[in-house]
Image (cartoon, rainbow, N blue to C red; front, side):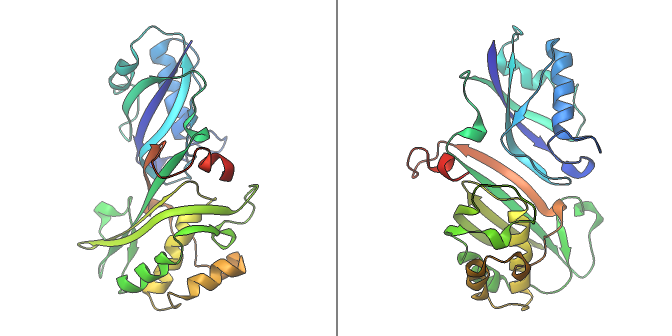
Length: 258
């Protein structure tokens, strides 16, 4: 038996998220079907991040076990014709039998994209959130800086999430302009349910002048979801990548806080 890790990119527009559920097709379901057909055995992948419905990824990770003799590096190209066009396995490699990307030190990078213009562009509607009102980028940057570091992010967690602690660590948070696009990039060791989308909604409030950038500190301190901004639409969110065993963190840092 060997354990294989895949790097997976997908446009999440047509899927009910990563994890298998009875209400609609998911990315995990498509991978299981394609891998089972290729390897001639029942395969069940286990992902590092369970993205929500409509959310995209350029670098999600998953692992599975197999007894098939195919070389690990050949699995990714062999899946091209077996998966829908909006799911691509970018790489495949063998990892230790007890390895799982969800249970090791890692940094996840998410990007939230906002399209700014007088009218929407139908060609980017699947991968960005449209905003026709002017956004103060400096105010958004100032608000985002308040979130860097280790904090209790209960105010930025969707109701009903079942976690042992709402304390999380954000390594960096930037807001940059690329033409008509505004990209919020967040790096952290772990995220709560809808946390990045709530951060995006709150930073947009700061950019619209609805809250002062410094008010984000109060939102954190009060630990009250009703004080933070709305949950931004899913299509603007993309899991850009997952870095395993990053430098600068003590052993077990992520595991102690997940």
